[in-house]
Length: 254
Image (tube, rainbow, N blue to C red; front, top):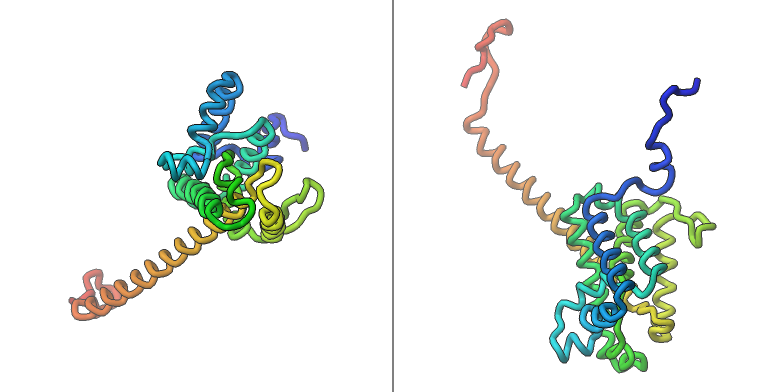
């Protein structure tokens, strides 16, 4: 039987995880705002990339210590922004619902900053690409997004993801594949304007942060169980026992 009142929300939930959650909405809004301003005013775009983009040389020599955080809000083009924000929505919404907005924001920036730290450290290595990496500018939220992908694969390992929008594979294998692609690409240096080392850094930083959080929760659980045992042991001296007739409403005896 057909309903007289067709649902207005059926289409909204037919694709993706649903509407944007608060933290992701704020992150997307900030990225889109910066992109629109930079697109409309090319002079601001050039200044923003020099000042806010991640350049190891500027971080070390000019002490621009904010760059490992601000570079995540700059993008090199419309599709760069589109795919990053699309991935953030598709894989981040369920994580924010599960973790809460505060923890999700912490995780997002830890993954992004960890990715930036990876780029900074590799720029001092003796490899051939290090000198180029030291002077180049890295922009984009890809490092943080890779951290989000890692977290999604950890909590939802068997969720099917369409690789290249065609081949359905479990989330855990999807992350392994893109991680391997980034690793192989980084071995030949940062080509094509893509900092593959930053992507790998986001994966590693996200993994380490979740592992440390799991360890913290485990220790907190042990502490809670121990304190509960101590309290129950102390309460035995002042416990409450039942006595008297079964029909007596005041049959408890201290």
